[in-house]
Length: 454
Image 1 (cartoon, helix red, strand yellow):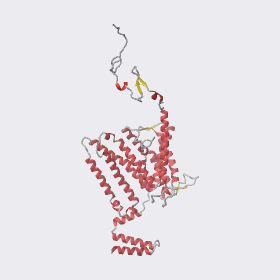
Image 2 (cartoon, helix red, strand yellow):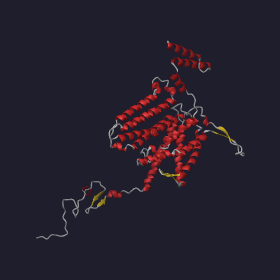
Image 3 (cartoon, helix red, strand yellow):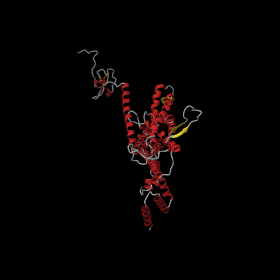
Image 4 (cartoon, helix red, strand yellow):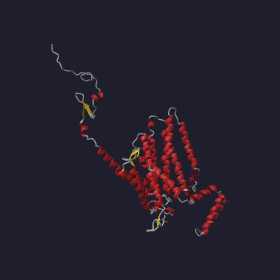
């Protein structure tokens, strides 16, 4: 009889080790191309492919991010100046695209739960309210600045005169659809989305509308506030890393009081110098009277008095050894207010955005710009700055005159047809007496009007 050999173990069909413990089959069998596989003793071996791939260091990651961020910074700057110099219509298109993308990003960070709840009309209503709001706001701007075109067109006249009622009815249709889409068990989520959408419309679309109006009033009222915000952010970073010590606000731990104050002073200096340059170009200071104009063709207008140098006299007892009279444009005083707002108030738009991102535990609003995050991450301070620029301009700088569009609107809405005919005759007669037009126009106009009455 053969003797049993001690210490010899036989292979069994069951998967396990010498002690009979079962191993996971997913670890025992490695798929082709898998990074690791089991050796005879059950230990994982790292494949040669993985061992050959060097890990990217933290320094390399920061370097790649910096390069990507720098490249896209120059791309954004180049695209911005290209649009601005190409004409007002291009910069309006750029602002429109930015507000749509920003709305999409802000709505997106709050819609994560809706992916698991396939509720009808949730996303569709968000975009519907965006379209309705843009129709109302854009229509208000177009009617205000281009009355002389819209009110004399037979097709556009009804849309211009009833614009607000049409906009209201469009909103009511969306409201009815929202109420009809409510489902039991999801009321809280749906009403939260409804409120969130309206908040995004106010913070982004409504404020972007005033930026549009700034463009119509003159390119300087768009470019100057935007450049102040950008340069203030750069100066705050430089001053902060140079001599910043005291933390400014907990929402942004890297912001310092020293950087905040230093950027304020440097932004005022930049604003004073930039204003002095922009005031020399009518392309920047003239309101839009030709959407086809660009930096080469330019614009023509009577400049706002705020851009014209005026004489100011200082008290003689304070400046006895120096001339007490100097000439400076009032805009140079207004820029102090603009720069102060851009430095001390506009950054709180960024702090608000930081708090919003912390609430939803996201780093950026999106990935629209490689290396920078989303569009909203770059526009968080611009919206409130543009809103302020419009309000300040309308309150302290704008010169209100009767425009051709306003006169036409008053004649159409306040006079009968017979009275309108008399106005036309009176204007024609006045122009003939002033030698601006020939008498044939008056004769032709009178005969045509008599034929129409018959």
